[in-house]
Image (cartoon, rainbow, N blue to C red; front, side):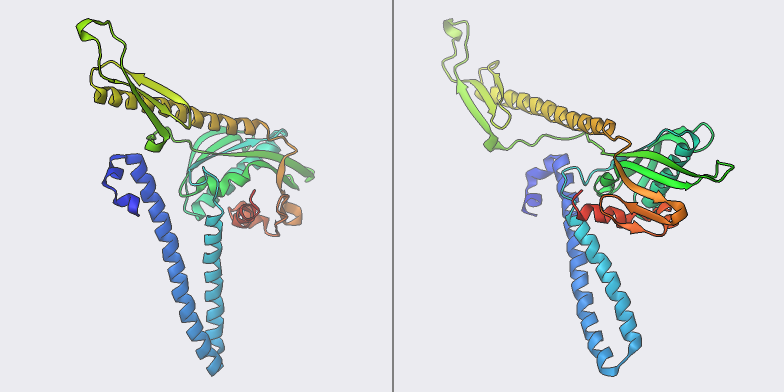
Length: 328
C-alpha cells in the first residue's frame, strides 16, 4: 500500500497496473476471510440455539452453510498454491488429435467442448483462435485463448495425453476403440512491459572524456559509465560536456539494453515451453476416460470420477484442484 501512495509509481503505467491488480486480489482474499469469520460466528450462535431447542431444521441449514464455507476455504487454499511465476497469466490451450483418423479427431473435438464448457462455468473468457476440421468428423487440432485471473495457473496441469476408451459410434460392429489426444497449455507472454531499475543495482562511474585537446580539452569528469551489476551490462556516454546530460543519455541506453534482455528472456521462456510441447509423447498419459465403465481417472493424482458425462461437460475442477494440491 505504501508503494501505491508513492506519486512516482503512477509515472510507470505497467508497475501501477500490476500493483493495482495485486491489491485487488489481496482485498478480495481479505474480504472473503472476513466474511467467513463473520458467518462462522453467526453459525456458532445458531448452533447453540438449535442445540438448546433441539431444532433439526436449523441444524440441517447449518450443515449446508458449512459445506459452502468449506468450499470457499478450499478456493483460498487453491489460490495459495498458484506459486509459479506465470500462473496469473492468460493462457493458450492447444489440442492435437492423435493417430487413428476419425476416432481420434472426434475425441479431440470432445476435449475442445469440455474445455469450452469449463471456461463458461468458471467465468473465464474463451476464444477459439484456430481450428482444423477433421476429415469426417471432429477436429485435427484447435487452439483456445483463455483469459481471466490465473487462467494459466488453473489449466497448466492439463498438459499431456488424454486417453479415451469407448464403444465407437463410427464402428458398425460397436467395438471398443482407444483414442488419444494431446493437450498443451502455455501462458500468454506479454511484450508490452516497462523496465524497473533498482538504483542499488547500478554502479555509476564518471571520468574525463577523451577529446582532441587544445582549448576544448575536457578538464571536468563529464563522461559517464553505468554498469548494471546483476546482468553485467555496461553503457557509457561522453557526447556532451554536461555530466548530467551524459548520465541521462546513459540511463536511456541501459534501460534499452535491459528491455532487450528481458524481451529475449521472455522469448526464450516461450520457446522453452514450445519445446516441451514436442516432448509430449503418446506415453505421457495424464488421464483416462473409459466411457463404457463410467470411469475417469487421473493417472497422476489417482483421483477418479464415476460420472464421465459431467466431466465431458466441463466439470473437471476436482482434477485441477488435486493436481495443484500435489504441486504438479
